Image (cartoon, rainbow over all chains, first blue to last red; front, side, top):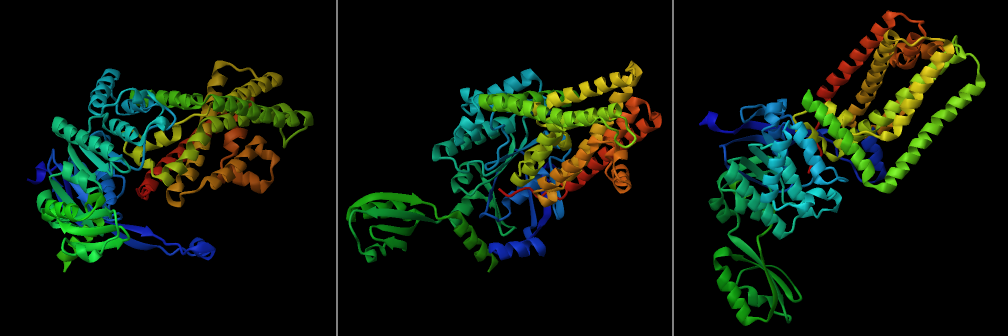
Amino acid sequence: MKDRAIIDVEQLSKTYQISDKDPGFKGTLKHFLSRKTFGVEAVKNVSFKIQPGEIVGFLGANGAGKTTILKMLCGLIYPSSGSIYVDGFNPAKRQNDFLKNITLVMGQKQQLIWDLPPMDSLQVNAAIYGLSESEATNRIKELSIMLELGEELYRPVRKLSLGQRMKTELLASLLHKPSVLFLDEPTLGLDVNAQARVRSFLSEYNRKTGATILLTSHYMADITALCSRVLCIHKGELFYDGGLNSLTNKLTPYRELRIELKDQFNPKEFENYGIIKTNTDRFIEIRILRTELPKVISRILERFEVIDIEIKDPPIEELIGKLFNQRRI
Amino acid sequence: MERYLKALYLFLTTAIGIEMEYQLNFIVEVIAMIGTLSGSIFILSLFFTQGQQLGNWSWEQALIIQGIYTLLDGITNTVLRPNLREIVNYVREGTLDFVLLKPIDSQFWVSLRTFSPSGLPEIGLGATLVIYACNQLGVVLNINQLVRIIIILASSSITLYSIWFLVAATSIWFVKTWNATEVLRAILSSGRYPVSAYSLTLRFIFTFILPITFLTTVPAEIIIGDSGYNMIYIGILIAVFFFSLSRMFWIHALKYYTSASS
């Protein structure tokens, strides 16, 4: 089993040296003159294995250590201790054969040349990865069909919308046919449609090429649409590694309803439906069991004059934190 | 190797593409080019009017140093400055990630990713000046001599690049070090004049600590014929030393790269 895993991480830890700065000028002076650095454990003893072709989601709040793990898997950051093997390589060595086989997409950073059309950046990438012209052309054609990109490739990057830009970034990152994809918040800031398109592209790519995908996101929807297996990280520790289904029931047995009513109301009347989170004037937010959702909504619509109703998942940070605490105690 | 040449060609063409993307900017760039050039010519003209000896150098001999300095300054403005200035941004914004993930040497990428054409006329001016001064001095530029000149100037450029790169690479720890490189630039400008024109202490520093002597004075001596082959070898050795140092330092520095958070 061990030699079949494409990603093999054992007892991985990373400690960062950081220094805080007090606010104000006095703090600045102190920060400049006597900087006290201290170690922060960003990742603690994380172990997992991923088989080829899997799509695995990394779940965790901001600052949980997802990105740090991802960067150690790519070889960008040296681990403080522990071992990593990706595709048989030690990432920290960053050998060319390893780099040609992986890619990292970051929702917050872009590699395309801002002032030029994506095509120019793609040519540079093709040359660096040693693709011949015909190989590159075919690959660009193939990917642009999957990503629904056309004339955008010939327009300066700065003129593209965020969604278009993300799609061209994906194209640039996948030009060299990597078999391991690391995606760090690939749908960050995109609207719902663009998010859905990126997702369907990724699952299609995985199906067609058998590539292994490891992605972080704090949109639950990304994870549910793509991953059958998830890793949950909280404060640098891995505390859940398993199927998505059992996790969803644990994580999101509740939904939150935000209701706008036509008239003022008595909050007491809502107490039967679920737990009231906030209520102000004509707005109310209640938390209800997922299984009771349709029943409760139809009852509310019968009884009150509703202007607007919004159903959402409770914030993932909150849920993961809660689950983490339950496990611990 | 072929991959690197192809990449270099695309680096060059995309850099020109970026310059030409904005028409107005391109015009401004041309004006800047003229400005840089006329600045260099102005300083040279001051030098011309003096017509006196510098150290134990005749005026024409010192002119060769000026020519070499102008040439190196041109290379600085064309390649070194635009690229090495970016290292700070790569580190600060965390885009060094993308560079490090490419199957290409990262030092190659950060050192040659872009070009600024505005320094090119300076390179031409420097070369013209050297040739003019050689004519005045009656130095015959045969093939043999030319090869030596090219070798020693290449060594000077590599030494200059390596020192600059060393300073720029410290941004991996200190993030903003652009000021330090500006100080370095100011010190390097002392290469305008023959080393013997400076005091003994400075001469010592310029020879043994910051090898400014080897950037301009020694190449000029070789052109004039005051120095033998030994100096060429020493020049090459210094270039190799500083280049290796910059490489080792870069590889070492990358171990400390923490990448900006996202």
